[in-house]
Amino acid sequence: MAQTGSLAHHAKFSSRWGFILASVGSAVGMANVWGFPYKIGANGGGAFIIAYLIFVVIFSSTGLAAEYGIGRRSKTGTVGSYHAAWISGGTRAKEKIGRFVGWLPLAGSMCIAIGYAVIITYVLKAFVHSVSGALMTVDTAQWFESFSLTNYSVVPLHIIVVVGTLLTLLLGASSIEKTNKVMMPLFFLVFVVLAIRVAFLPGAAAGYKFMIIPVWSQFKNPMLWVWAMGQAFFSLSMTGSGMIVYGAYLDDKEDLVSAARWTAVFDTLAAFVAALVIIPACFAYKIDVGGGPGLLFVTLPRILQDIPFGQFFAIILYGAMIFAGVSSLQNMFEAVGESLLKHIPALTRKFMLFILCAVCLGVGINMEPIFRWGPWMDIVSIYIIPIGATLGAVSWFWIMKKDDLMEEINKGALKAHGNYWYLLGKFVYVPLAAILCAVALFKQISF
Image (cartoon, rainbow, N blue to C red; front, top):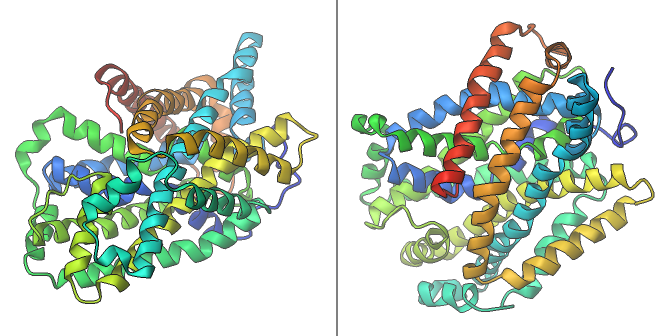
């Protein structure tokens, strides 16, 4: 029997597409907008894209569907779902371990939320200065350094980001669904508009050629596959935490594997739309596509200063980035908040959100400069998230009883999934997660 948790009395997503848009909102973020173009540029263009798509298909069909299913079966979020999975394993020792194992991926969600809020604050700063027109006249490098290298330089905007995001979570699944039904279509719309504008830049065609035609020799490079795997893993928000709580809000009649695939389709489209803006623009202006955060805050503003209606395009670019960032931050906060509600029954949702606000701002305000933010995010993405994601993969396919997992996966499925699906998860998805974790730990790579 499925375990009953704290979400049993909460509202579910009202529609399948509401759930998918919320999941896409969680997945779409900075990894799509600068991570994907950067890794395309550094790993042979089209070759990286092919490898990335292979991993997206594998991970979405197995691991992402399993995370949805674990949440839906337990009717709760991260900690309760891990406990339920280990109870399914059938021994008292496993049950005891299961009480604690879910806290690590949950800690990863909170830690990345703290750091993520800082970079969204930078984006909000760029948006405000786009609206005022100030961004169109400054030296972009000096402008970026003026706040990214200074303590407590964006505190008011930081508060707006954190408090504003938490306010969208007041009603749980209902408010998450409603905000993403607005934010995600707007994200796609503004990036499509930008992509059309960039297509008319002289030299943009070289960027498209770079993306379409693979450098075949790159396939021999093991790190191409590692980077593509890492991008697919974290672009889909498969951290062993966040997607579980969204699955807990999902109705029993929904097809989990189909929903996971649609989430992957729209997340991948978001990544490609972003790449169709950034890569051709970089080729047109002969700029290194591997600029990381500087790409968004130094390089692209410089391009926007030079093109007609640049201020207008700056406003919609950074507006879209805010939508992408807030929708991801929603998922991180909701994953942590649900577990707090489950394990502290006297806690109200409003007070839980207040606690998250205090923790996020209390820690985050002290690491607003990028020289503090960067090491924090490295620790999270090298250690906490890969280990947590691997714990999740092992828990679903090696600890949890196969019959229990398959019962949930096939609940609502239009076509029953059998041994092929399970073996793909157990002997392909789990080893790949473990390999990615090992590479991150031993090579100190931040994905």
